[in-house]
Structures are given as structure tokens and as C-alpha cells.
Length: 456
Ligand SMILES: [Zn+2]
Image (cartoon, rainbow, N blue to C red):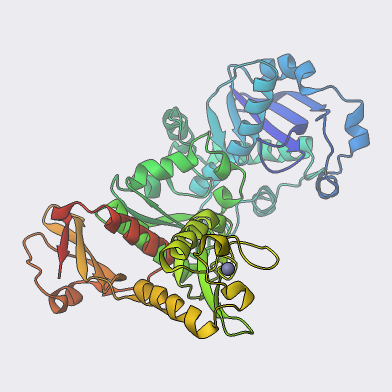
């Protein structure tokens, strides 16, 4: 009734890697039965660090069958059986992929001996196969080879069956007909208690440190999406194994969630958000004075802590922005970093550039127009409040923009009236304006719908 499985692979995730060895042991609930093992030619190089771990070399698999050639045997061993593995999602995702390659649709109920061990043998320091085996006095021969690890998993599973006085195995089988495959170390109750509401959520590791911050219009749905079988970016990272707890903070609406998320990422700088930082790349326009005294501009990615004149989301946007200014203030595109010609710029012919690029126009005269442009950009903006849905029906959310930049956000009673800067300052918690918030607020203000904004 059970098929206990272990595989070795060329790397950590099914999308880009393949199986090099498989071991399957049948178990009828009382004792182990039929076994199957095979080396598999993965049709690709096995990285040396993997060989260092498993002892499986390119030479060893070069004469082995490809998965397609043994797919029917493997399928026969697995069909009609509950799939059991230590960190079942890993082995399952690889096998599913290999079967797909071979043109076979395969699906089955699974049991994860990591999850079961946490329930049935609580309080262990670690639930890696090695550690559990250690604490249970199981000796593993051939650690990190499929047969050795499968054999150890069989012994762990034997003990789990014997100690399962509360029916955890039965419960796990009943519920895992669903599609969401929870990370092995995350308690089911924690996941079940997540709200289907907008907010910011935190993944915590075994030490309680935040390893990832995310935001969602529906926390429960988003997290279920992370953990579902086809969320590639999540199955390829160790993050699944590291998640031990999920916390959240409700925000009432998605815009507050986005603001709060960006502040929390900046404050906590969780390691799995760092890996995604390319997403928040920004371009900035920076003024500087050259050796001859002309004010010029450069366009660069915005580094943390730097204060560009303007922030834009692409380099193209930054260039378009500068071109507009070149036309509006009769500036030199060369000095603005938009052209790289020898001698005079092209705009000199049209008369737009007065010749600053060849020092025909003096820095003093030229900089006057630059200064005008700078003043228009640095002009103080309006103070206003953007209203949104609160965390409950009695509440509304507030985002306070003070003189054109984000000041803070908060929540207030739905009926609370807001008439002055002083009033709103008491209602919001001041916070940093991250680049994300800056962009969000400016794009929101660019097409405001009247009733959601109060101008102060
Ligand atoms: Zn010029």
C-alpha cells in the first residue's frame, strides 16, 4: 500500500535537473516488501559537487538506462501505492517531471516523513533524515545514495506507523487530496489560520528570523499559490524547507500592503527578498557640475541611500524625461548625457542648443536655464490624503502625502473627518518613503479619482 522512494539528482530543482538514481521499497503497513533500484542516465553532466555528495559519477551513469527506458517499471512499482518520501515534494516533483518527459501521466497520494515526524516525534532539534535516524538509533549505510536513504526512510516510516497513536497518517492521507503542498516544516494549523484578506506576510525560519516578506490582496490565496505544485520559483529554492512559521499583518487594501511591504523589506532585508531585488531596480537622474562649470546630468541606477533629482523605472523613461527638458529649456543634449558627438551637438543646428557644448555659451548663462528647470522639479508639491478600505468595515485607511512626498500611513474610524495637516499627522505613523512608495504615489496621483483624495 505504500511505496517509499528516494532519488538522487543532478541538482536541486526539477525544472532544470534530472534523476540519476532511484530506489523504491514497498511497505504494506507492517513490513517492507519488494524493492527496486536503478541508476539512470540523466543525459547531462553531473556537477562535481553533486558527485562529491552522492558518489554518483558521470562514468557510472553513462551506461545506465535513460528514464524513458525504465519508466514503465517505475510506474508499475508506484501505481496504486501511496508515495512516501523524506521531503516528499522534492522527490515527487522530479518524478512527475520525468514521467511527463516519458509521456506518462502520473499522480498519487503522498506522505512526507518530515511532516509526519514533526507530528509523531515532536521536539527533535532537526528533521533531516540524518538527524532523525541519529535520534532513533537508525544506522544509514550509503548515506546520500538512493538505496541507503530509502532504506533509512523505511525504518523511520516503520517507527512512525508504530508510534502514530493519534492517527496522523490517516489524517494526512485524507487531506492531501488538495493541491497545496505545504512546506515540510510548516504546521498545517498555521497555514489554515491565514486570512483571505489584504496584507503583508512574513516567512520565518526555525530561529524565528524573517526570511521573506510578501504582500497580497488575499494572503491565504497568495501563499497557497507559492506552495502549489507549479510555483516553479518556489520549488527551486531552499526556502520551502526553511519556512517554519508564517506571520501576517492586515492592511485593509492592496495599496497599503504594497507600501508596508516595501518598508518592511527595507527594514528587515530578508535573504529571499534580496534575491529578487532586480525587481525594484530604478533609474535616477543626477545633476553634477563639470570642469568648465556647466551643470550636466547623468542617468544611473539608483543605489540605496542616494538622492537623485528624479526617479524613473526604466532608463528609457529617464532619457525621455531629459529630452522633454532639453526642448522645454533649450538645453544641450550633449551636456544632458543624451548625445555623444564630437564638437557641437545636433541640437545646435536647430538653435535649441545655444552652443554650451563648445563653450560658445557661457556656463553662467547656460546654468541659469538649468537652474530654472531644477527649481520647477524641486518645487514643493501638495499635501493630501489618499483614502482606502480599512481592516474592518468601521475603518478607513489613510496615506498622507506631505508637500508632494509620502509622510506616513495609518487607519482611522470610517466617520473621522480630516480637515488639516495637523489632524492627519496624528492619525498616521510616519515612515520612510521607499522608491516603491515614491513610484506608487506618483502614478496614483497622476490619475486620481476625486472622491478618494482629500487635498489639505
Ligand atoms: Zn549642444
